[in-house]
Image 1 (cartoon, rainbow, N blue to C red):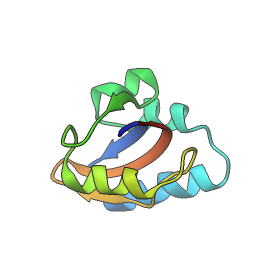
Image 2: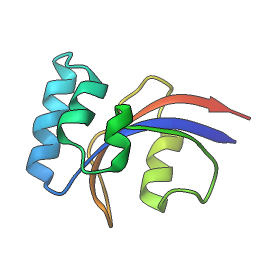
Image 3: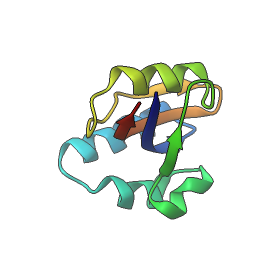
Length: 92
């Protein structure tokens, strides 16, 4: 199983919640990723490409596994900070 996802990574939970509200109001995910994310993937709108089991930290991977394609996660905390994740694909 492989998944494709984009994310926005920030250091502050309050900022992550603010961004989540903007997403819920219809703001473009890629635009918010470019503006706020601290991950180098921000230059690609947060796109992380395809990845399989064990390639991401456990909390991130579990969140992606539970999501449906096209869905956006609640705030997910990992050792790197706070993520908002959008699952963009899944394949066997």
